[in-house]
Image (cartoon, rainbow, N blue to C red; front, side, top):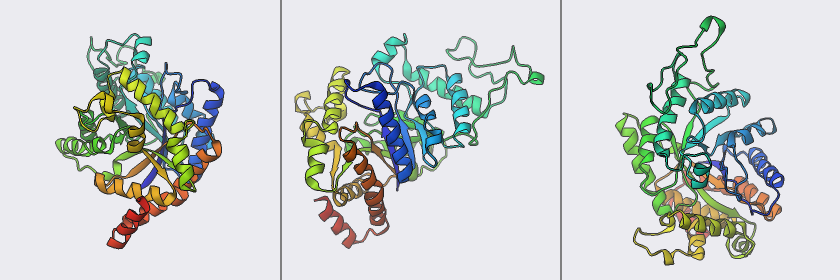
Length: 379
């Protein structure tokens, strides 16, 4: 199993912007040093808790401060920009990074971002689907392209102005061929969007704020989509994000990961519950669709979604998750605000140096003795 990193990024609103941006950079630099496979960085325009407005621009500052880690938009919100711009900029990023780029994509879910851009009432899912066609068409097609048709939202062509003898009218392609990996975040139970991912060989990343029982609904839909295109889905392509905190002792893990009022994990989920309730999406935190809103509490959400403990305990919880989901290829560690920088860094170190090797050893040795040890660790 691989280890990845994801950050919205999410910070208290009263922190200085330049400080949180640098903290987010340092987290990715640390992940690179520790051997994380990839780092996904989110973007929003109008949420004061989230510091990155353009994930590709932010990641560009990390190209020369990292050496191995793959740099991933997490995600590029495709309704926010013309897809030809995203295709051209992503291709350049891929060359600048030496082929370390991953294009993470989504429609863009924050209503205040959409209102700011004048697309609040637009069908952003339709915009997303059309934008993907443009991006892949530009990367894999030949000029003058003729993607779409006159009158479409995106009719992409250089037919009238192309002059190949002068090198005009062609978009440069990415370094990775036939294209960089494309990853889509899956943020809803029984997601239909994951069907299209399977059909197009895009890879799913299940969100860290979904209950495990809803995460389990993603893979069957992905397989169905892959089958429809004559492809065989590979569980190694499935990324599952979880909210994880690892500490040297159980008391610190419980306090910083859940119980202390100053816990960044508590702050994150308190804010997420308020945002989802305001947007009518509290169902993401419900154990059943008919569960009353009043039963969705912060304490219950923390218990269900934060994996906190010593390396042994976290190893057991992750092996249990692997078993319950039937297997996946990458556990994606969700980064939080470094309310205590020492603990934030230490958690990532323990995750990479202690937890991941133990998880992989447990996956390689699924004997009754190993499973019994896992149960003791999780308990």
